[in-house]
Length: 111
Length: 113
View 1 (cartoon, rainbow over the protein chains, first blue to last red):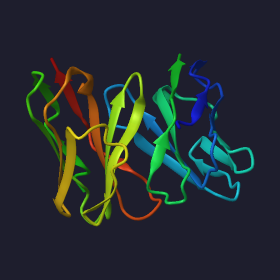
View 2: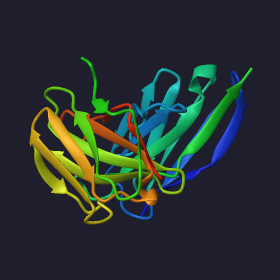
View 3: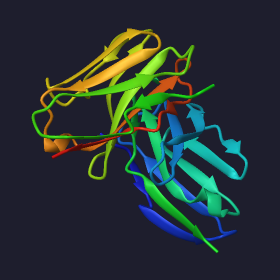
């Protein structure tokens, strides 16, 4: 079963912040985050492992709440280049090789 | 590194025809994945290989779909016979080891008329 992402879509002005959530109905072992621009392939952003750690990548960071079976992606001081669709990929089996991708969140950053 | 290479980029075929999609993973990567992306169903895992061995093909929709990895540098996804509902973008991805980032190819946009 696909993890559910929220919101489905968000429009930001450059410099604003956003949070994208990813919720799973099953136990989470790890979470991957990817960004896909229109007509292109998904590009890796970060991996979070069991333990609730928070990771960062430039002005993009993420958290992983094992108990709540969810992860959140934080985008601060958004830039035009952040526009795209964000996907979480969850490992619900502990194999870490079989990722189930979420429904996607479309993010548009405007001037 | 050249990244994951897929061919063709676009494929238009008629219902009933055989379609073969090709993928060259990044050299040294142990895992290879085939995903399908549609507006309705998003990114779905079809099958994945570890060291050229198919590990999980539970996502392959029907017997019309088959995938092979004859060696570490090449994989194919075949659809025979193709149907209009197979129209989608098919991505191949590879990863270095267990629980490492997926590197996606540019995808093959398949249209079955």
